[in-house]
Image 1: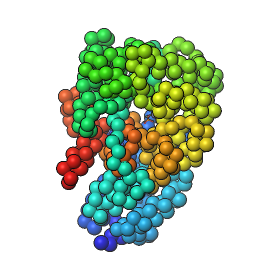
Image 2 (image 1 turned 135 degrees about the vertical axis):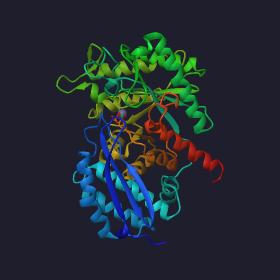
Image 3 (image 1 turned 180 degrees about the vertical axis):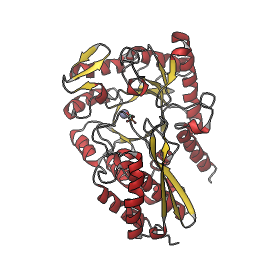
Image 4 (image 1 turned 90 degrees about the vertical axis):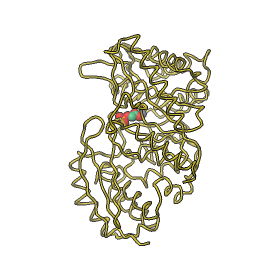
Length: 441
Ligand code: PGA
Ligand code: ZN
């Protein structure tokens, strides 16, 4: 079973992502098999993420720089050591933040190489990761984090203002708790999505509603974060579920993007809050329904701007007291050095895992291992500009992640064409893996 990388072909091209922006897709051919991968793009990015280059430049780098390195190394992809040697060399040449290649050049190649190695072993990607990375392998159930109600910059339209036209916090997600399978968890999320769409249409008028970047609902004129949360809680009840029991809520304020470094204030509606006041504001939001639904929240992501480490430590301890996980996205940017800093400070106890913040699947798995060793919950995540690539579903299932965050469920009646299912492909992949495992297949 020898498949050496010297005989490998890589074809890279630009494709359109869910926002219609150019991104990169690669096809790797080895021993008669063709495996593909494509890379998503963030909008409200962490400042310290791996570097991204223009898509056309990434395609050029793949053909002119990465492919020659792969061929020259000529590793045996039939051994995991061969794949790791190749990945390590590529990561070393790329630089810590992928400065030399761009993460959007390296990551799709990296994923396709892992797919090749899996195929050489006759395995699917999740099976291969499970088999080869025992430190991470787990069959734990993954929670679906469905981003159904959107504010912030993912919702804002040209000429609009946050806190006036759309609420400030970027994401309000639902996390089904009581479903026995991913199919049923997705069905629960869809019921809430439908109930919320009806509720918002009745209150605000259907003509004011749209689907934001991650397919969640957004309404022009729903500008208050508290009111948005109230409506989501109501929709969960209207769908027949008990908030905080059947379905929990997660918020991602994307705080870095509400923060003005010049004035050191956070923008919430017309208010300009100091870091302390902003933390209090978020805690009050967490407590808003506590009397009726004491365990309403699953987690909060990036509760402060990404460089306020001491603030994060203090606020996290308040949030954790409420039994709510603090997830670091812009704080950790799926990078070892930043996660180490958070671990030392004892701050966020959840890691949002975005492979393109890191640049390679190898590097991403290494950061995940570090998190696991410190009991940090893993939430595998899409980006706001997505492709139809469903790698994150394989990754989540392989490691039995705490959760997978992949936008609104995109019910078929609302998003009829398969080519529009940027989020749904991930859910369907979760279901497909789940059901094939149950059948023992
Ligand atoms: P991004 O947003 O993909 O635009 O960075 C997602 C998030 O903040 O979690
Ligand atoms: Zn985030």
